[in-house]
Length: 268
Image 1 (tube, helix red, strand yellow):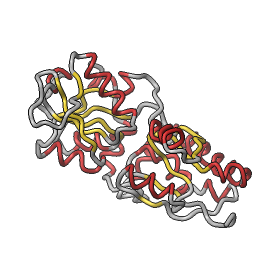
Image 2: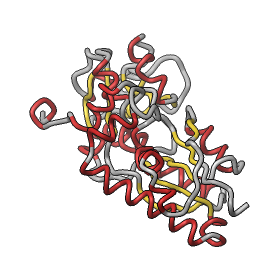
Image 3: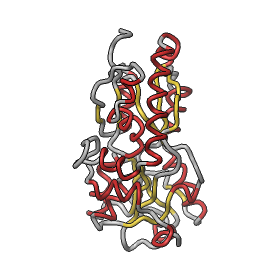
Image 4: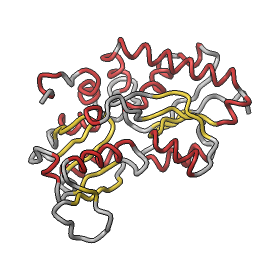
């Protein structure tokens, strides 16, 4: 029904911030759009399936996934906004000091249709390595195994040494540093400056049949993005488990994500 409240789907990553802050700050209601409490999903497959099954109206999704949905699967999906650019990192075991050190190791990515997969493969090739295209146990000396893993499982996998690193959105890179189980080796924006990471997608039907409602939704997101730029510590508090509780991570990890990465410790 056209009067149904907006249903938001998101993953527990800071990429979801525009959707979540628009909800927290009442920007949807200010645009005349009723909205339900946002729904948290654990992985990319689940959020895409929920969107296709019409269980949610709007989600943030990896930019290559949006392209795959539209042109690979003929799902009538439309990108209405970029959530952010850059904002991800390659986090590694404390003993790894260069990309070359990852030869023969396993690295986790969030999804095959992700900018993270593109960026990590660019990095590997630049350093004379290549992703393994077989499932055999033994890797050649210049191969790196890539495995798909839910972002929330990555820090634990790094801590128990089942992977040597992962490339993913925040705050899972900051979380590894806060938990002292890993360190950031590279930021994705260093490899591909201002790359689109997550985008906001809605359904073609809504754009066609409810243009005013859709415009209200997008207006609310833009308001949230503008507000967030000047209120980064507030954003961290609202998102955190101690604040608005939208994300399960503690304030320390989300604050680090949004306010900490200065040139002095990370320039090299």
